Image (cartoon, rainbow over the protein chains, first blue to last red):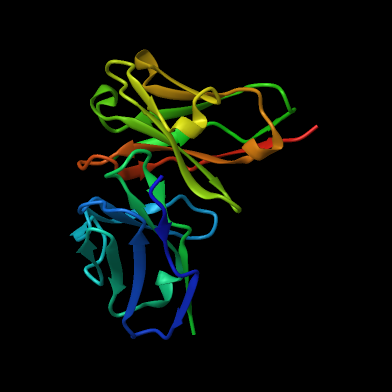
Length: 106
Length: 119
């Protein structure tokens, strides 16, 4: 299976820029997607195919990367962005998720 | 608007089976594949499999073959997942998630069903 590696946690201040990384154990072309999950809620799609903003998602969120290295950027970070962010690939079978990066605000 | 309404929490005994439901509304049920995803604190998010509601065709993560069975009822726009031979390791929140415009994206999610396997 394709393993997706994310850093476990980050802490930033409101108004700052934050980048969350995801590294794949093998190439996934551009089929990397990002989700936000708040406590007690289901995940929400933010970015699809590496850099495309999902419907209704603020332009503060952006994605980049291809192959094995991908980044989700939030600029500027707002208090409501406190959540866990997951990457997920759909190029290789089975689809797999990263373990998530917990974003906390200072 | 697209909505996926999942069935309520289940407390089940080891060795038994459970069938979860996911009722879809706000779109043409047979036109979009439905996925099922498992979430635990320890293992994170795991993709279980996908079903084409139009044809009934399925594809499973090999890890869940024999554990999960995906079906649909087109007349009620409802997707089902049966989990068999339950063990405590099957305790988790299970989500149904409708595919987005891109293969392998999960654009719409149900609220999740908590399954607890305990004697």
